[in-house]
Image 1: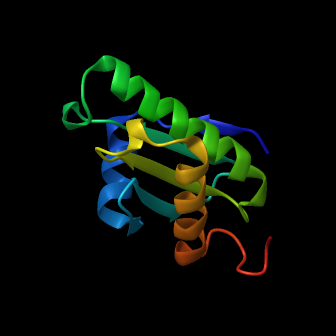
Image 2: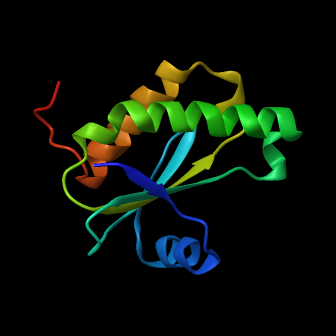
Length: 114
């Protein structure tokens, strides 16, 4: 299932207020079950992360981590990933590992996978 990106402010607000969240030192994930037959995600990087280069790197690392976990997601979900200050300074496997833990915590992927 190919994922779509969230771009609308109302979608982001809906997830912030009604979605479940899991936080770590590199990434915060908001997740909410969706009625659509697709996986949608959005990435937030604030100016606190750094200048444009650091923000773009953070987004790239998060996107790469999500792409490798996308196949394990059960059903239709909406996600928002919020980058933290460390995100642009760590390698993708660190973000992937944290994202996987957060997905298990939120019930997005099965515990017995891997």
